[in-house]
Image 1 (tube, one colour):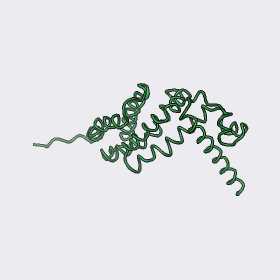
Image 2: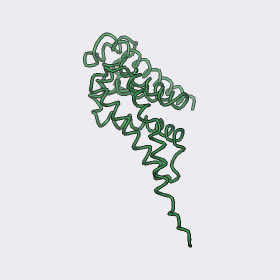
Image 3: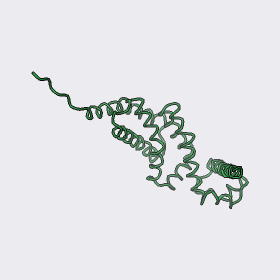
Image 4: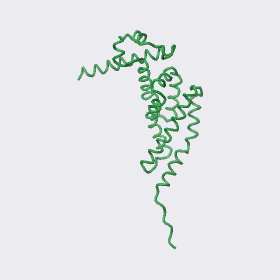
Length: 203
């Protein structure tokens, strides 16, 4: 058992070292110019060690992006607020533009969309529960969460496609304005539809 734990720690350490080396390289060069030789030299690992973990530099970049976003960026949304988490996501993507575009190229728009949808859905659930109290029927709650997750995601993807120029605080501020009250109204309307019709009074 102890051996398994030590092996897991070594694997985690190697991935972390490669991730740090890649992030340092991306400060001065685009992703498609980074080589396995450079990365392994920078962190003191062998090429064999690199290929044990990743088939190429692009897959390393995807792993770094997904790990950073999932563990360090959007996790704050459940601790502070969904808006703060989304701002951190956009700031991370803009500050790591080369890696973000490389990941977009590697995953494709549909792949990036699926990944971000999975990460952002818990954030939207928090918005629905806080702002609207959540619809009475579970299927209506799922509908509201999926609808607003897709809406926010569409704004993020458009921001990426436009070159990530607009400041993240402005993007998220606009989203807050649009979402404020809208979720609550959606919940109200769905609950009203689901409520049994009132019987008229008998004269």
